[in-house]
Image (cartoon, rainbow, N blue to C red):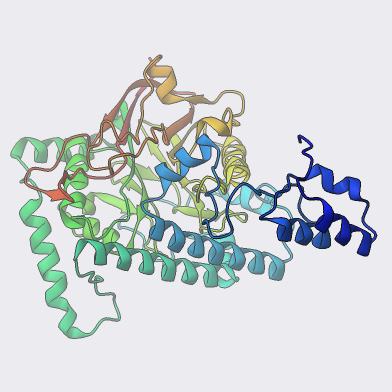
Length: 481
């Protein structure tokens, strides 16, 4: 700091003498005739290294300039000043509740999955499925304990926060948000469910005879299949944004491409019900819709896959957002394969990126799956992985399917330049969705982005509407010769 001589040091010297403050300290402060009172205040409080005496007391305080990177991240993530304020309050409520729950549970660190959970993956086969599992039938003991623990209260809090966010978004779009009736709804709610089914059927493209024959052929082949297809997609929980048409478009991709495994993220109870009413749903076994959860992951396996036990759910203990790992095992082409999906912890803003939690969840997932008895394992989902997260902690023998098949292609699944539905000015371009594999009898064959076409005749804020804010990933494997 540059030392400046005061023009009129007498008032300052008098105060210094009165409080026995060495006058030489005052020479380190820029002093003028107008702001002597601030210098005195600084001396008395002893909490200021520098006093700006260049402005008049009537002038408004100068705005503080933030680093360029911080300002750009705030622009990318925040929708508006009011939204950022509301989201910050919501984030504080989430983190305060998470800290309270962890204190009650006595959790001070977040180790990897316990040995008991690892043994659950190595349990004996439970036979074939003949019907989709009922709610709760495929949840492991660890997940049941989590549902009975304070985590359930956390899910209720997240549900309230999600409802508040949806209400704000609906208010901005002048859309009345109406929840889908549950099993405990009144009888007069049934017409609403029928209307939703009719709307979806109107927007669902008709199934051609060729597609029907292909579906029948897929079911007949069963274990004779030489191809394995997996679809992963973050469907976006925005229920106020043409949700019926968007889910019909996603369902059309499932019906046309007929993946053996479908991994979905950000599924809400309404979205789950809309998909479950689709004609293709009966060909799949789906993980159940959990109660009192605002959004979640769903894992589906085709009926042509010979199931080996129910879907298992392993919650992450370090998640303040209720994130988990879902996994299922089945036989296809005569060989067992294990498929898992997850939605790793999301960033909450430039000052709360949740990198440590996300990296720990990734490491926990791959270490657990690496111990699975099956030789072929696939982990797919929305990883929220960014450039600052470093290299994914994959064990030896694992690989990133997209990087293996598309060297030099960034494979961005969240891209405002390619997805015109995203808000203008959003500069976040990431390969958030990934598929990590450890293969033995299967080999990587093809991988592509899906859901990149706008839905005809639909707009939102003057922008086209796509199936989701994320593109989906469709991976095809083939049996080794």
